[in-house]
Structures are given as structure tokens and as C-alpha cells.
Length: 191
Image (tube, rainbow, N blue to C red):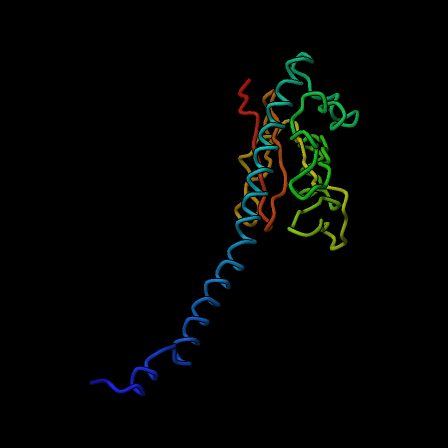
């Protein structure tokens, strides 16, 4: 026969079991909190890539409407000229909620800057915009349309960047992603 003391002592959990369960739960929460920001950054970068790809389509459309010429983009505010093409989502903002800034330039001007974006270029991170000179800004995500260029160039980090192209309709769209990487897509034009 089993005594009442033995039955009473077998109910409940030991302190070791409770600590073990809490440790496992803590590790699961830690893994989620570590992975979540990376997942969110990846989603924002995917949206930026989609927006930049739509900009390539918008510039091609603009070029088709202007006899294959892109010079007018440089002479005026490129964002205003491309606004009607709805190249960006309905809000006109990047995934962080900052307005996109579109700058059109020629490859010659681009290369005079040392094959890098101008010094006031904005690099997006998850919380704010940081200029390459170290100052912060909330002015938006800067995107470049580099005329007479393609994306065959490579920067010091191995990322694509605009390179000279002699094709009449050649251009590259160059923009920044969170985490320090870049996006470059060219028109794919060979004429």
C-alpha cells in the first residue's frame, strides 16, 4: 500500500524543472528578438529594390516619351518629372516613411565624385538617415539616375556601381539599402 506522504511528495515540479523551462523559453524569446530586426530590414530592403526597379521602368517610359533623351531630367527636378509615372508606392515614401529624393546626373559628374555618390548622399538605416559625412537627416532616401552608365562597375566592397557606357539610351539607377549595401540596376540598353 502506498502511504499518503509518497503521493504528496510526487505532485508539482522541482525547482530545476522550472528553471530549465524558463531558460528554454528565454532562449526562444532571445532568438526571436535577434532575428526580428534582420527580418524587418530585409523586408524594407525588398520594398526599396522594388521601388528602384519601378524607377528604371519609369525612366525608360520617360525616355520613350522624350525621343530617347534624358537630359531634361538633369536640367530640372527629376522627382517632379518622374512623379506622374508613379514609379514609387502610392505614398511616395521609402519603407521608413521618408520621401524619396531622385537626383539625375551624368556619369561624367558621377566619376568626378570619385566613383561614389556625392558627399551628401543618404544611407538608410532602420531608425534614421545618416549622411556619408556622419551627420543625420530625415530628408529621405536618395536615389541616383546616372545617365550614360551601366551597373558593370564594382566598388571597394564588391557592390555594383555605375560604370561608363557609350550607348545613347544607357542609364543606371543607384540607391542605398539598409545595412550598408547598395542597389544598382541599369537600363539594359545596347543602342
